[in-house]
Length: 269
Image 1 (tube, rainbow, N blue to C red):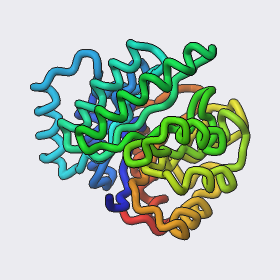
Image 2: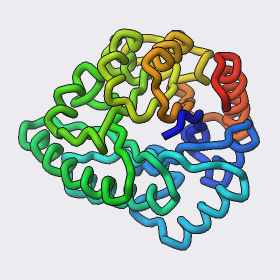
Image 3: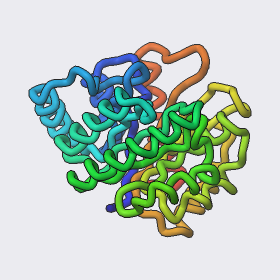
Image 4: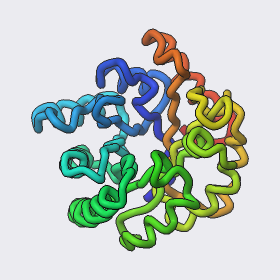
């Protein structure tokens, strides 16, 4: 797996997949992560998308010169519905020739739900392995808000050839207020995907500007990745703030700004 910098379609969350892909390509990205998260950013709706539409998206990507590397397919994995939805996300990622499908644990609140999560993930790992895909479990939600908390979860699942961390430093601060420069070290041995998401404000503050425009030490995180010889994807995310997503042109400007900052930080886009 080569280290490649991606643009996530989340910067264009309210808009169509064609608008999102065109905006990323216009900004200068040559690879991307596509959202298939029900109710959040469903540029691909895992419940309703047809094989014909997946083929059309594949052609659109080819026409734009965008390589699809990863899919955000986050689902509540402690539920049967969420597990089925993520299984479909795995199949979609495989059909588009991707390498990684990302998710999170889901918000399991009881011991029964936690156990259901572990049971469901085992089967999903087998499904991903059958397609030659890896699963990135994101630092997100109540079960796995930090990599430090996630080590025991990945240890129990024990599928290192398939399952690893998708590290999101912005989420780590948002959910816990922890320091990503410290916490990321728990993820490095099993890091398969990196959400390069900056942050303004502390715990509980929803404000995620273009990477490099926030308060996190993004260059310090790159240095840690370099020292660890991390070679997986780095996916730039922008989620704006509590006011929600702006008009399309402002989203496009945020994507352009992200590319400028990434290049200034020494990343090849």
